[in-house]
Image (cartoon, rainbow, N blue to C red; front, side, top):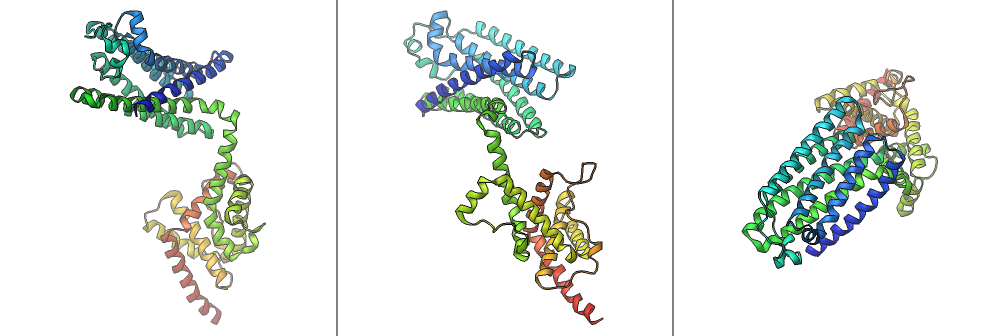
Length: 427
């Protein structure tokens, strides 16, 4: 486990150097970009921090002060965390209040580093550079519990918590898929960073009481730290290099593939009653899945059009009475907002399919039935749904029509319609 942790750390360090140089090239082309400057500072700080760690024995011997490299590495980690906060803040705004907030964080960082340095000087290490454990590097794998370490962990934990909040908030409003994915990775990476803080505290406590656990706890610390850095590195840079390697196209294809199968339950129900809606024979088996994956965007458009064609064909069998029943039942079931509207639409479609399948005549009140699709709220001036909104909405309807509540309401509405139909024909 120890060798795995060390190998992971070396690999992450090399990745750090590659991504840092990549972003520095971008900064050279756009030096006034505040978010990019903050990101580059974060990348360079953590890259140097990780590079120093395996060199601790040699650098301490060269400088002549035990643990000075450890102090430097920890300070650089705090610079990285603070710069990451600035990067996320500048991504949303560069106004006066944002700059003031970044300035306050920078002052807090400077004060924290100053306190760490003072504590380091005031409480020198009790080991000598001539100690064989220091010369061989064994000392640097043992539990370390200098007073400044706890200041470092406290500030790092606070900073990473802020990064989690900022990244998660911005991911909720980001429109670019790779940017949203990158922010989610930053969130997860920062959570791993908090796990590193916890593991470090446990390592100090356990290592002092049970030295034989020292190597294991140190390996856990290294793995959590390396994993955190790797996730944050990839998340913060993937929006820029991802499109160059085709990740944006892959993402779009994966989203279309997912949307196709989200719509499939609704399409299947309509196709079973109205097979004529299919422009081509429905794909099946492994070859079918491969063909869908190959042309996912086109398949998504086609299945959406076929569902809406089914809506139009079923219009004469749609009933306002069924819609009212579905509305009442959805309210009784505790559904609100779009969930309630999607349930109403699912029931209207399901009841119309059942009526058509049973050979029932078209409803005399079909013209009074609500026009489908019902939602979501239209934002455009023309009142039409955008393609993405339309797919998202129909996927909600597809999920609703599969629910037990929809089956109960559809069965009830169908049985009532059949009981009323003979009376209507006698008249």
